[in-house]
Amino acid sequence: MVTIVGIAGSLRRASYNLMLLRAAADVMPEGVSLDIASIRDIPLYDGDVEAELGIPSAVAELKDRIARADGLLLVTPEYNGSLPGVFKNAIDWLSRPGSDIPRVFGMKRVGLIGATPGPAGTRLSQTAWLPVLKTLGTDAWFGGRLQGARAGDVFDKDDKLVDERVRDQLRKFLAGFAEFVGR
Image (cartoon, rainbow, N blue to C red; front, side, top):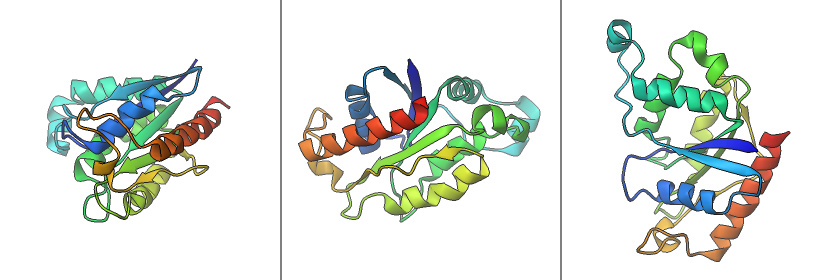
């Protein structure tokens, strides 16, 4: 069984990216499990806190989940044409201490998808993640794209993905990503 940890990069309970991540769990290919993780309990990074108190338990737990997984799916919003601060903050904590980066991220197979209510999708946010992923030594997958635009139109009042075109894109993306991760 291939295991992928999925993280939505927004704190909102009604986040389109969390909805997209949950939809991904529903259409994950056979033989692949999606472990949905949260960044909600990760505090703002502060080197003084790290030096005095060490790594917060929420960070240590998520680091271990990622390290055990075969792949990592980042589901990113786009804020002001770039990546969300809370999501970057979480990754910054997950990279501490620096000596632990190879265990958590080293050659970890990573995929990026995202959703936004705007008309342009999450292309800029996904692009902004690339230098971060390279710095962490991940193995990013570029075989598919899902940069969901007008997310308010593809989910219903119960937060379910109702747009069949987007569902098909998601299935295709996940099939390719799962194949990449399972190699």
